[in-house]
Length: 329
Image 1 (cartoon, rainbow, N blue to C red):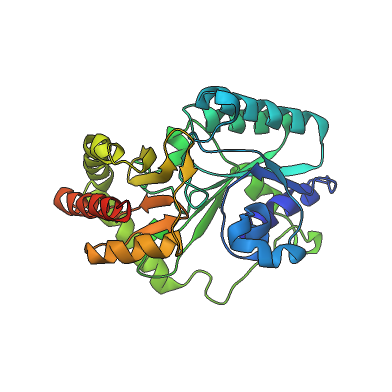
Image 2 (image 1 turned 90 degrees about the vertical axis):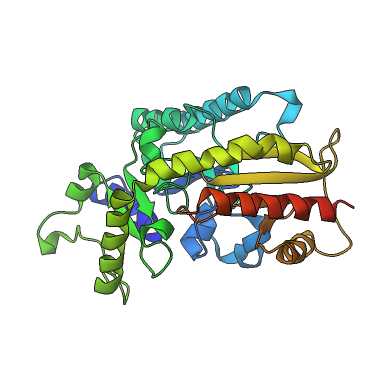
């Protein structure tokens, strides 16, 4: 994501608008562990030790659909967020770009956007002359059920980044794509100094590129997106079975992503807690049931391999149910 931020800032400098130097984003967004990414996607639990070295960004408050203030509905709450974004854009001409994960926030608590939300932000950016940067590193290439998530969200980024599923996780590879408007801004004579200085030791690594190309071929050969859309229905079929468990307060699901929020009290929505670390308790119990689970505090995440079979997914869900039952005793 670092190159996305650098390109956004330099784009405005190339265009003669050096005052556009601020980033805005949604609270609880996560964009990686480098300094720019920590600044834009600041999650206190992950990055508080580095806060003194991070630059300031403008975060729009954004809660998950289970913990909304004043009994508002998810749609009402996200409409209020849109209102705050438009107010910000109208009153601040220094915003260079608005940055968000595409389709859902994953590491920030499995927060799935309401239909139309991302598309409306995209159009607000265009209306107010703010670049729209999307992070599809974790949500693109099928995780949420679509090959290109921003298309399913009816949005159009100026800059978008991909990784993770690009090579299936077997070798390091990421890519950042830009609109023609952004691309053209960096063209010119060398003496114009419009080009961007950004090169890592392994940028354009040929082995990584070969693996990514073959992985993309497999997407087509195996009709993986159609398979994902079919397999994800296993989650839908078994959601009620999971939600019936006494300590499950909420389930958030889209495509091959599920977040299960565990609570002490369903009425008060008090997060579950143990004498030991919640993450450790659940992880250790899951291992006993033959599975690995990642937790975000009281939220159990299911993020299986995209090519998982229905029987394997059922095995994962069975193990998850046993794990939740056992830790609730």
